[in-house]
Structure formats: structure tokens, C-alpha cells
Image (cartoon, rainbow, N blue to C red; front, side, top):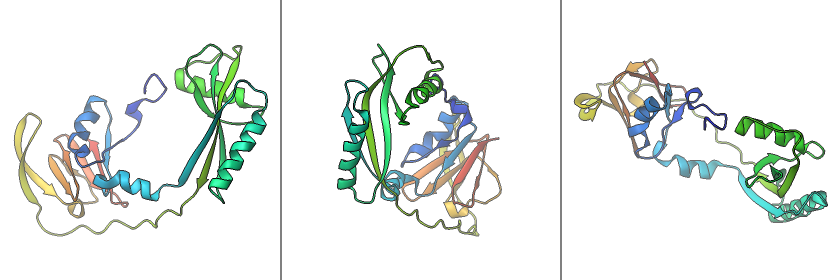
Length: 224
């Protein structure tokens, strides 16, 4: 990621899956990431995303050169509209410098695709060469039907009462600390160690980390 221009330290780590939250803070420490986000329904996040994502279908055709690109795009767009009536059309191309054995997929801008490729190559690999010939290898058309996103609900209020306590192993030793349901996590910061026990997933918050619940019902965990 760093070689391709993305420094993990500038991002938050999203902890999803049934066991992802058990290791998220330790992984974040190893990568020098300061923030971990444990979303609601973390154990079923992939399935939830599949249900809520736009409907997408991709069409592609290899091209031996630049001749006839407009017709290939037009034919693919026709296939896409027949397969998915009412779809939005997005165009892309796989391009490379002459002699390279790998391509970059770049949004297609007729008459400006070389400049777009140079920018993408610079962003991805840290260099570009405007003097070098650019090859178009594959053209792609994406058909998209946007789905209306669900209405976001505010996080429920904090449940009163004392949290259960559990004994668990963290930081090289056994500790006894609160085991909180998501509704018991306060909107103001608390301190680890603690467990976040959701239906379908568990998140371990070690000592040295602070956590709170935001208005979208995520639990946000930050290094203290």
C-alpha cells in the first residue's frame, strides 16, 4: 500500500467479521494506525453490504490497438443496456506503457485518456513518463443501477446499569474488565481494557486505548 501511495497511518482500521475485532487493535499498533472503528452488525457486514450495494454488471472486450475504440465502447454499452434496462453507463480502459506486462484500469475520457493514465500511474507507482507510448489493452463498460440507501437511524441511548465483567488474556496477562453490549457503550470516551460483545462479533479493546460510541452507533477506538 505504501509503495502505491497509500500510507496506512493516515486511515482508520475497520474491524468486521466475527473475530476481526479481537485482533484489530493489535494489528493497528503494528501498523501505527491510531483509530479502529467497530461498526454495528460487524459480524454480518459483508452480507449487509451485498444487500445494500448498487446493482453492477461489467462488460469488457480486448482491443488490439486504438482503432475502432468508439465502436467497441458503443457495442458494450448496448449489451449493458439490454441486460440492465435503465442503468447508468461508466466507461473504463485497461492501459499500460508500451512493453509493460501489467495494466491500470482508468476512467475513459476520449481525447484525454493518456493524461488520465499518466496521473494514475504517478499516483499508483510514484512516477510517470509522458514521452513513453501508451497502449490500450482492454475497454470496459460498467452498468450501474443505484439503489436508494436505507434511512440512517440515530444510535439508541445508553442503557443504564452495571456492565458484566469477564476475565480475558490481553497484553501478556490475564485481566478482569467490563464486557459491554453496544448499547452500554457511552458517547463520551472510556478506557480499555474492555470487551465489546455484539451479536455475532466480539471486539477486544486493550489497555492504552480509549473508546466511545458515535451517533451512527459505531464504536470508535483510539490510541490514548
